[in-house]
Length: 295
Image (cartoon, rainbow, N blue to C red):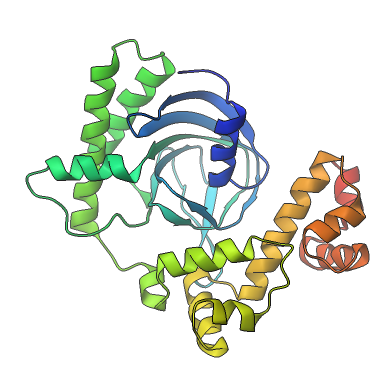
């Protein structure tokens, strides 16, 4: 199916790219087969660290379009030339910042589809799929180009052609992981992705009154140990991370123009409208009201 994005597809899209965006340029989904292909256009802005249930391969179009935040909290340019790839395994998607509008092709792979492909390989990779940012790989580039053309033209060569290319693309990804696998910052931190995912999901309930003790006890760690490994894994303290979630959610609600500032402050976990305004000015350099007026 190719066309404009539906409400359900929009939610899937927003779970990968939190923050303002221009929707689908085209989209082709095969849910029963375990994969999808789409072309999207995003506006400048920051995306908070997110969680995804699917594996995702993104090919960005544009020069210097995206910066990823490393374990030290620094934004590092990854898109220095047209076309580098980024692979995000199911789990944590790192925070990123887009300095200008940019387009990208997104391939989404269900874990069960990847597993089925792996089981057909003579030499199966022994490692799990890992985060790989800003890389180039000629076989993958050729396959993604063919698949993008096919999807954009509505699948003119038929389902077997698309299936074959997606199988080949997935095998190349698995082989790339097997030969270039490196320890991730999550492994180095001692905080596994499942545990981190559980903590982040807890933090995304912005109405909850969370503190360091509550979050640490959630996973059975001492406060000092949890603080250390969370910062090593995300590049932020739990407080900074939670504050970013609140600010991002508040900005989304402010853009809707249908919710009052008092209600936004309450929904996003701020103690009052004035508290939200003060934090906005400290972090963003403007108040919520100024932000809404300038939309």
